[in-house]
Image (tube, rainbow, N blue to C red; front, side, top):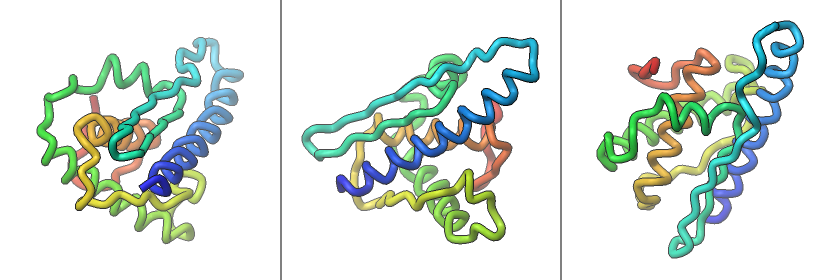
Length: 146
């Protein structure tokens, strides 16, 4: 279980680092100030001994301003969507010749038989939506454009 969390931490850190360099290049060529800050979202569940840390420029702002509020979606809906998104994510990690290896760097060990709880599923789901809209990717099905 802890391995899953560490993989997510590394994954989101790598994505954050790659976006930080892209955002710096854009900010230098643009008169509009960079509104994204390097922010961190932390989720912990001591009883299951896991922690998820999402580090990505602008995700906290997007989560607070654009994402649907907590409990808008049911837990089964979030678990189903996360399973589908992460399955496609992992397929893309395994095919670096077809998909940008800078976006899809690591496998995510998400197991549907483990009940991560609402908060973890909510944040993973919203990160997947944020990722798809920010990087113009489509992992599976309809992606809300919020």
